[in-house]
Structures are given as C-alpha cells and as structure tokens.
Length: 169
Image (cartoon, rainbow, N blue to C red; front, side):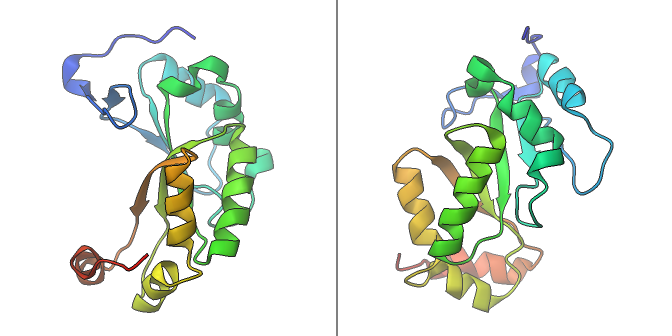
C-alpha cells in the first residue's frame, strides 16, 4: 500500500507507537455503511489511527469493516495505530475479550485499548480490584500485547478522581 505524505500539521510524533500519528483518525459505530475499501482508502491517504468499536457492544467481527481492513494489512500493520474499545471488567472476561479481539483483527497486538464507558464508581472498583481487568491488562501491556491503556467515560467528575485516587493493582 502506498501511503501519501501528509502536511506536517496533520501528524504528530508518537514515540510510544514508533510512527508519527495522523491527527485525524477514522472511527464509526454501529451499523454504518463503511467498508474495508473505505478504510484502506483513508489509510492510503495518510490516516493511520483507527478507532474500532471492538467487541464491547457484542461480537460483530464477522461483518466488521475494521476487522477485515486491519487483518488485510500484513506488514503495513505496524504503520497503523489501532485503538479498540474494551468492555470487560473482570480478569477472566478481559482474557476472553482480548483473545477474541486479537483474533478478529488478525493481529498479535493492539496499540491502544480503552476500557469502554466506565460510568459508575462500582465499575472502576471492579476493574481495579483483585481479579479485575486492570491487572490482567497491565500484564498484557508488559508482554507487548497491548501497548497503551485508556478509559472512556462521560462522567467527568468521576473520571477526574481516578488519577488522584490511584489504584493498588
């Protein structure tokens, strides 16, 4: 795949990923008309950040354009930053979901994995407690299977408290 050079304004160094990352990413959610060809078209024009809805809302991998496009990248995979939304809250569920996500994408690592829609304190407590997803995901990060971890939430005061509180895992 030939990648078109982008204006310097549109890219930012991202040493954590080993490649400059385009400030514009591609994401879609739910039943959209986006196709694997659409994604490859964006990638060929320099967009190299894909935000995949993951399996957090159920397994749609068989019909998902992102899965098909990422799985077809071959050696070009390392030039594309893939972010996946992640629904698991327990370690056991995290192990199963991560295995399924890697299989669906046809890759052996995910660049950014975001704990999806953490909206209540009880969810954060479950994620960070012994047996929670965070310990498992940190181990996956240590092993290079996940490069970076993140969280999505619409609860700003709650989310702002998490970094101050820290976690014991």
